[in-house]
Length: 342
Length: 276
Image 1 (cartoon, rainbow over the protein chains, first blue to last red):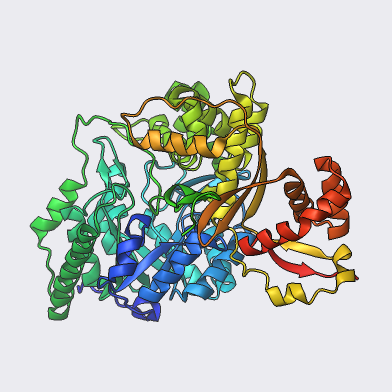
Image 2 (tube, rainbow over the protein chains, first blue to last red):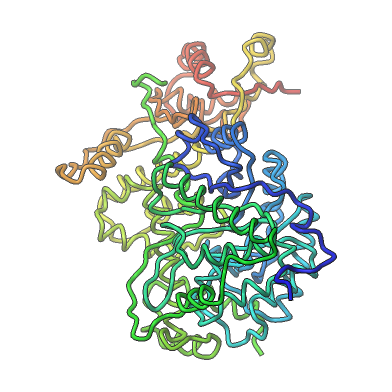
């Protein structure tokens, strides 16, 4: 059987392939805007630019002058007990009108309850109840935004006894019911597989490939007992393998490198994006030839890498924050009235 | 059977608890009932990963926004304050930048804090920085519009303040102190920063050209600006300001032209609306 999906749905839901981009992060602003290195697009964290003015808005305008911009959110909490905030959605819509983002994305997750916002991507129980809830909300959100909407598989550190669906089934069912796109995070597949003793190869095989409108790649921190999705290093080799496996099934899909902590010099980030381009080209060439870059031995090695060894130990992590450091006054200059303003 | 919403409500409450959930019997029972666990981590240890992340993430964000408060307190007292704050005042906004909205009031009401007035001044200053940092951009008041206001209309005119302007009376020289504390934090070899004696001042914290300024104002000018930003028409604002500053209305009137010139140049006021 061909590994490529057969479906009436157009690849990427008919949305454009933007190539390979990087997450736009504060430490890189100066050089990216001044030197304009060749990048196909940048992704912004929506919440960092939903305020009205000041430095964030100024830097967003510089970004829009320099690169195509795609919006990605981290605070919607689509599967939470509370309906998504109308104010939040109105601001998201305003931002999308400004950025002309070809799609807007967030995560399959919940972020808070009872009025408290936990600023985390908490995993959902994979149940028919939540399939209905999330699909219904996703449809309404896409209507409210007026832009194609996509949801990303989040990494997770716990499972629920009440889950009755596999994660890929949960994702596929919601995407089909709501007719939305998927932002497929290949690193999250690996993290989740490691943390919950799943088969990452099976995960990649089973998601609806024609709905994947964007791919995320990132590094992570392996603490032995579990992996934390820190986005603080290079993409590891088994994740590159899973990425090629995905591209061989989807065809060309916009791909993004996320690097949110221990953020390196621009050159290192650009080199990671170049690696993504090379891996993508390799997978697309194989796809065109009707073959795969991954033999059975490689796939087994990926599965083995995603299997936590016995006798592992736990080290403590530090706080992770999607999107890297928030732009704040700390990074801005202040002046007293007695000092010359620039 | 527990609905997803009930499960999430209970989980959210556990994740905001300030102590290790592995030592919390109620959390352990909840986790064993609802969470899977695996051969490496028990259900409550899995839950604890998220609780720890909650505190680390929000502590980092507050450290970023309140370096002056942290510098005054020192690490141990800062940690204690932040954990108490997060447990008492949960974040409610999608925007992490709004996390510190309640910190000045929380400090003001916290028992047993040394140098509380200094801490409140600093927390208020740092919260004002957050507010003006991303306030909406507004064009400065058009001088032609200002010139076109008839003399007789000024008494009932209302002035619209720049959203990037915040007014603050301080009891301590917190602007200079904050600069020293941030420099000391960035230079680990530096000596501890001595805490200052009181030095009251009236400040306008204002963003101009993406730079935050701390303008020192005379008390009558500060009070007039305060009344104007509260929405009072100019005539009444002058009366309010004179009373608050303890000066005669005529004396305040003599300063008006100069103050308005300064405020227009700095962009404190972005529009003038004439009364009926």
